[in-house]
Image 1 (cartoon, one colour):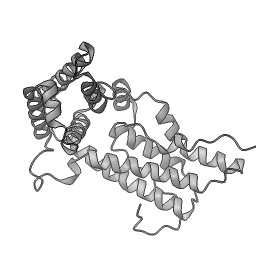
Image 2 (tube, rainbow, N blue to C red):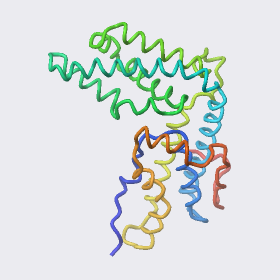
Image 3 (tube, helix red, strand yellow):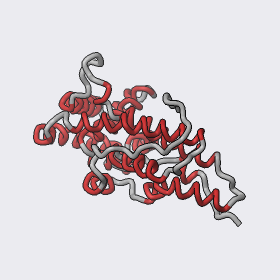
Image 4 (tube, rainbow, N blue to C red):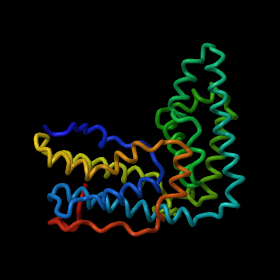
Length: 263
């Protein structure tokens, strides 16, 4: 009887740092079969393309600003996010009429607490940006300002803008080169990884034990990533122990794939 196989384990990714996601990409490329089907090879090629894009963006951001100059600005942003969280948490703990709304904002903005503030500078900015963009997109800024106080939200937005300028990210769009924007390449690579996993699963014969084992072997790096803790401590471990971000990506296996592979 073929071994148990749960596709959901491979088609959902936890939010991880750029370095960890690149490491996962390398592992998947290394675990790929030497002769993948055309459909799988196409998705694998797209995964590698997105990994190259993220790698370039990550390297550019690493060079963007000296750490010594960034630390004071980083500390201000850390404190302001912490203040917003504390005010929301105080409302929840007090149990006033605003508690349910405050709890929703805690879940929206701080699903893993303040762990994102321990990420490397540019990745922290990307996580901060993602949260502030969500507030704007969902028209929640006024409600949050009402709950925590307008000066707290304004102070947070100002600190975020200062942080982005220090990193060389939030210049005028025409002056900011695309490789300096790490958030989008990271999301695209994560989507490409999920697409590849679905392609591998789609070619698997669940009734054939050898086919299931082959698919599990190809996708094992995703399970290893899911087993790792998604905390700030894990992110620091990524930075210390993973291979250098500049390390070349493994080459694609030989396959009959069009040169301009698309997702």
